[in-house]
Image (cartoon, each protein chain N blue to C red):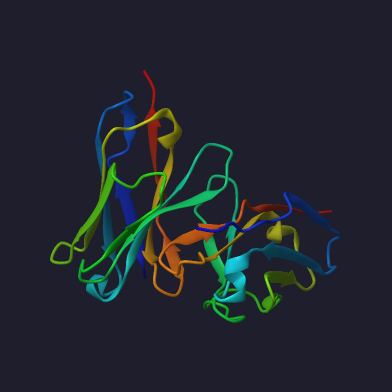
Amino acid sequence: SSELTQDPAVSVALGQTVRITCQGDSLRSYSANWYQQKPGQAPVLVIYGKNKRPSGIPDRFSGSSSGNTASLTITGAQAEDEADYSCNSRDTSGNHWVFGGGTKLTVL
Amino acid sequence: QVQLVESGGGLVKPGGSLRLSCAASGFTFSDYYMSWIRQAPGKGLEWVSYIGSSSSFTYYADSVKGRFTISRDNAKNSLYLQMNSLRAEDTAVYYCARGGDTSIDYWGQGTLVTVSS
């Protein structure tokens, strides 16, 4: 298996842009998916595949990838975006899934 | 709309067993891979297992392999997780989720499993 590494915490001023990153060897071969999780709630998929947004996800959320790093960018962060964000992808074997440890986003 | 409702969680002693169920609705269940993911209190998400759409294959995280068994009943639109030889470190909220091939998209609200004497 392999690991995905995320910064534990990131903060952003209201209305500004923030990038949350995810690093791991498997990202060289597999796309990252991104989940938003608010306290006491189930995760919600916000980005999947190569920068695709599920229906209902605002277009201020976008994804990108380069080498072993995937990024989730929120352009014009809103108060309601304050949450934990986790990345996931297939592991290097391709048979298992792996999650990053999550990044707690604070909107100031 | 897609709905996933887990049940079967609770308090169990170390070494005990528990069977989780997930009732799916709002989509053609038999068309999708299905997954279980867990989250220990205050911790991140951990993938546990997934099963192919026709049960032709299953995969497990190393941490549960040999102790947990995933299964499904497409006629009942239901997913299951049989958990044996439970340990304190298995304490978590267990989420049923749709997908496991290219992405995991919809999640249930989760069911809490507590392993304690």
